[in-house]
Image 1 (cartoon, rainbow, N blue to C red):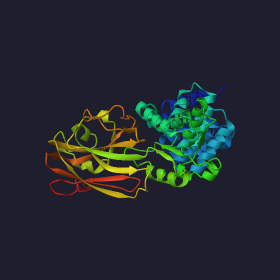
Image 2 (image 1 turned 90 degrees about the vertical axis):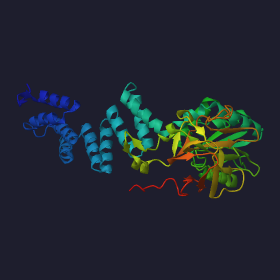
Image 3 (image 1 turned 180 degrees about the horizontal axis):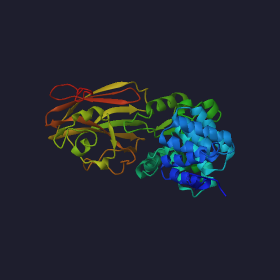
Length: 469
């Protein structure tokens, strides 16, 4: 018969401690543990539970002391190492925490909870490949565990950006790119696909008759996925996937001997055209990777702008008054630009649309530039925003864009819905009248675009961060 303490046998005290801990009451759990330890100061499970309870109560020093005692008393147990690892993480002792989890795994290599906990720690430390391998083991051991499957899926979703789904499902984009590839490719074509992603454009090139396709993808998870997708679709014999950024490609090592691609396809553009390094990517490829006569798809990219009246859009990222209170100070913390789906806001153009920058991807190296624009207002209204969109000229016959449907001139045959529109708000909005002009200064440094809009009355920039301090 079990010895008793505090009116309850040891086993019942421990069971009460476990239940209190599971129910979120570490205070009561610690009392049950102390009742056990008052009779047996080296009771390993009571020490471990007390350490876990103290950690939940914020007493990290006491938690570490009791967990270390539990490990000294019974070194074969795994869970005290897990909880000690959690404590070490909270006090910044990362190496010690990792050693604790490694000891736990050595003692119980098939414990799903330990695998899951260790994987979460590795993930938070940026050790993504190791975390993914542990999650995979945990899922294989216990496929029906919903928390492990959820964590594994969450990690996978961080490895591949969500916009890939919208992109591969963009029928207009796919149709136009495939048409341009078919027009460019002949039986001797060697295609370089930079930013290959899932390998979709590479497979289009192979289906169009390319002799060989070199798919370059920097993201390890995507590169592995592309290999699987390409194999599933029967094109592994003609498509080589290289897991490198294109700027690190070495033709003497990565390409077949004496081979230089004569077709480049790359969809490496963001909502402002150049934010993903498109200019460096194309310039480097032309200089170091491609044959001299190579065809580039696309060959030109244009950043367009339009001055828009849309209070609904303005309210997405700026403030003035609410319920009679002045909230203008909030504007000091507004984003420089927003990225929104055109369908999420309505608006009308107050002036003719205009090109902000035109990038000749097949021409000379693009240097940093400034564009001074004087935009004539043609419609009366309140100018709330400068909305940007892009147009890619794939070849002589095909282009794609994400111009919002401000009017009936947007052609469904060229509109690509996987890109959001970038928006710069006018703070404060400008009362627009036909005959006035709005001055805009745009600059790019080959990586980013910065825009300043000037007040038509004062001639000063509309936005002056920090003026409310």
